[in-house]
Image 1 (cartoon, rainbow, N blue to C red):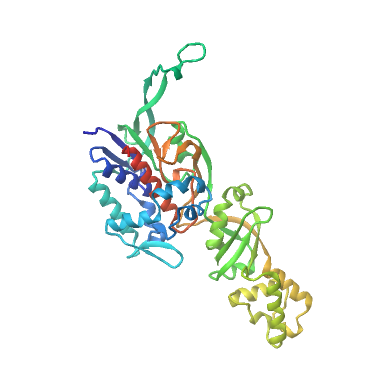
Image 2 (image 1 turned 180 degrees about the horizontal axis):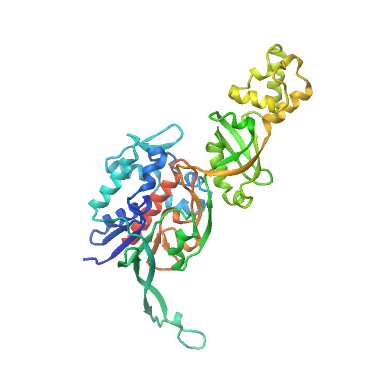
Length: 432
């Protein structure tokens, strides 16, 4: 009979997946999840607007890993062992079918995150996992065992024995309610390090935290003509930040405070540290028609000049630009509202072309993408073995989920990283 005790700190996606995996593989182990808050899986509940974007329909591990600004190299191997295909199969086996939308995001068929919560909680209970809420962990100390190995490798050149090796032989946990627990294996899955304090348990056990900064955020702007377009979407825009390598392409959404949409969120993810260092104040360039090069756009403008001479410039947008946006771009280029193509000057046409290929806007701040709560930063990746998710510094200590310095773009990628790292840690804690 196994007497192994496993404690998982953090009742989110990664913590539950690790606990379930470990308990199913080692039924005799005592596996406990400790959640500081009043309920489990709180982020799962609100993610995807309450639908839970479980994973992404990208089934090539290497391709999947490219969606991670931090952690791409480290996650290729883990995704080969447990990737999106495995996640779909895991939930299907437990009665939850996932559906892929046209953009690749995968949700439960009934579009309810409660389905995922119920599945995980029921699987944990069925595996015998102990579930405890309102149990914050204030302190962790290691119980050390001394191993005096006297092989020839442990003898120094002068013939003297080296100092005994200190190995973690377990952990004592002090809880916020005054209780003390002990375990043989400890998994920290406490979520993103939005503040340095969130990673202090890892630091107390010898680990280093990469400084936490926001990722996946929207851009604040004060440009009057753009803010008047709140609600307008553009199917494809190229956004870039001058004097950096940051350049992304995708759908854009104009909000009442600035810009959002996949292209902005991706730019913020890859530029998390660069934009943080700039205080979230920087110029932004937008190429409104990235499927056309500069010469092709010039040809389009000339065609309208010759084929639609009597029409107003503000009323003849180049598809797929929305009419409201086109009108504002024309006016921002200095072309008067009553200008017709027949009388449009070469100077007007040049300014409009420049506006279409490089509108420059000044970003004046950020706001978090409420559905994601993703931060860049966390436990340094070089300090973790990504085959087992075990600490390279403190034996018996494991990590999973966003506590690590891993973050993906929006679309189910962060949840997949949670399932994958949790599954790996669960296997390793069970000795598999």
